[in-house]
Every structure is written in C-alpha cells, then in structure tokens.
Image (cartoon, rainbow, N blue to C red):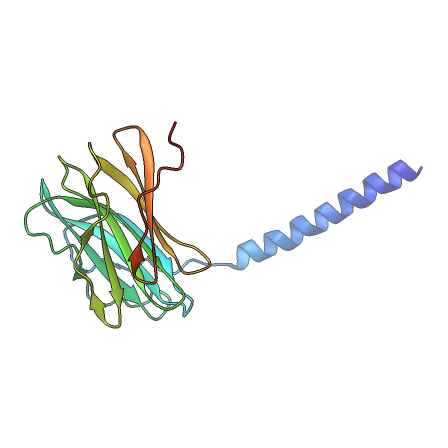
Amino acid sequence: HKPFIKTAMKKLVLTLLLIINSSILMSQTWTDPVIASTTGGINRHPDMTIDTNGIIHLVWAHKYEQWFTKIFYNRSLDNGVTWTTGIDISKNDSLYSYHPKVACNDTGRIFVSYDFHIYNSEVYLSGYENGQWDDPIHVSDGLPGKSYNNKAVVDSDGRFYVFWYNTSGYIYYKYQEEGEWSDLFCPYYD
C-alpha cells in the first residue's frame, strides 16, 4: 500500500501547485501598450536592457528611405510608462545602420553596437557616459569580407564585449576594459 500512498500524495501536491499557479496567473494583467520609439515612421530591430537602477534603455533602427536608416536611443525612468525623446546616436547621414544591440555596466556606461553600411557590412559602436555620446567607432576594422549580426554583452566584471559574424565563416569579438580595447579574438578558429 506504500506505493499507492506515495503516488496519491504526489498527485495531491501537484494538484495543489496547479491550483495555486492558476490563481496567480489569472490575477496578473498586462498594461496597455506604450509607444516607446519616438521617431514615428518605420522603426525596426528594437533591443533593450535594464540597468542596476531600473532604468530601461532602448535602441532601434529608424528607416528614412530604402537604404538610409539611423540608430536611435531613448530611456524610461518609470518602468516604461514614459520615454525620453529618441536621440540619433549613429551620426550617419546617408547609409544603412541596422541591428542595434544595447548593454550597460554597473557604473551606468551604455554601449550600443550596430551593423553599418548594407553593402560593406561593418560593425560600429557608440558609448554613453556622463551625459555624452561618444563618436561611433569601427569595431570590425581590418577584417576582410563583411561583418554583421553583432551582439553586445557586459560581463560581471564590467567588461564590454562585441561579438559578430564575418563572411570568412568565423565569429570574432573584442572587449573593452577601463576604456581600452583588446586585440581581436576568434574563439573557434580552425
């Protein structure tokens, strides 16, 4: 009779957990949608992160013409209820910028990597600290072929990494620590 009692107890515990979970899920509600991209028009490829102070950082690609897109950034200090006006951080006046990725470290420094120039495909990066956006830098400089599909990441020590794919068939990355860039790495070469 012991196996029967163990099985019955397991079923009772699972049933109670299901009832508790159902009541919790039924009591949750979604807020009404809020327009976070303040540029109007066609906006693509959003990415966001939340820093240690609870500030939501948002980036997106705003399309002006078929081959002309800029990267914009804004933030929300109140859990996404209101948003600042979008700021053009790509400083691009004629080419295609796309796939922005945002990351921030615990000191409040924000990093935005993005793919640039649809035909040559390069990876660029803009950083924000102390109220000022840096000029974009060319992170994938010196590689043959096209570089795209970037990803921005900050590790637990505050190092900022940019990963990307190159048409040579490899994934590359660089990291920035205390304002200095590392050499170029290819973790899966050969």
